[in-house]
Image 1 (cartoon, one colour):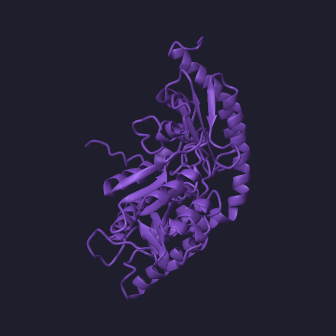
Image 2 (cartoon, one colour):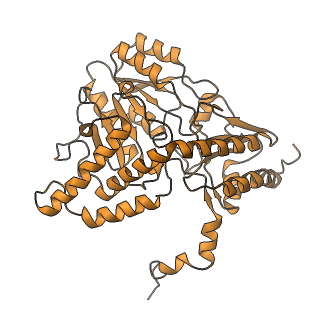
Image 3 (cartoon, one colour):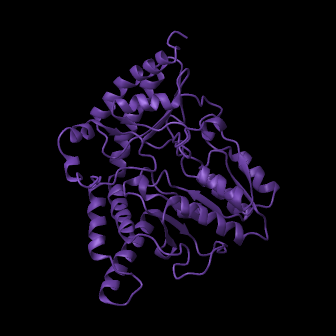
Length: 397
């Protein structure tokens, strides 16, 4: 009989394999942080206590319903939403796609045009192209959307809705959500805020600054399998999918994943400022180290940014090669577009900023990164760049 990959599952945590794991560090946590120990415990607890259908009236169903309601209440409190405004999606991408479809359909008599920044997630850009048209507002060299350009677009054309990320998922630059929200209110246009890269790292946007908001629990250490859509009831929407007892996401979503999301978000919010201060100091060190490498460009706002994220690019370096070289040294990093990393396509974010797209490295520190990890990365990075340039015959250019 052919051995199963599950036959040696227990042994994978022993011997040299555990030494390999201990030597590795996740510097690619953007949208995919490791699940925390508290999140893991919460997930297992919900498997035990919340296995039943939470819509049933028996004791087991009511117990599951209690976990479901408490989870939504906890998430709502952090987002500044009401509990009934929280809708549970299978993923953040699903939440974005559903929000776009419903907003476009609800505002179809007004327009099918979406106004948004040029550095939004590909999931959002692609969804607006599928359901209508969009106007992409230019950004400055740090990736911040031009407020005047947004104002002009909202004034000059009928708009179904506007969209803006709270902070950029590739370079970390924080966007002027409050200013854009005021422009959208004046134009009587709903605003969708993509907070999928920022919740858990910086404070949530003010309640007055969004009509719909998307958050991603996988980004704050809750594991995958869940997404959050917060939607104010007064926002005009129309469903474009069949009626179901789960009105927004037919079939529902994983209760264990939702409970883990709520528990980890509560923990993350409690530790947020301490972690942010530490991550910001480490990212400053990494940015400074990258800037000292010849023919390097460190991008994004150096101050008004997500605390755990940095991006830099190198001339004469291939993105896939530098990613693989750093992986050999135990570091998982991102490269290319965060939205299409499987193909390492040039980043549309960096292209919109007018900065170097070649040889891109994106660092997003996980919650369990240590000073030792950062020191080792700073030591390894210049050697990795030199090694890749040498392989490409570009070390003397």
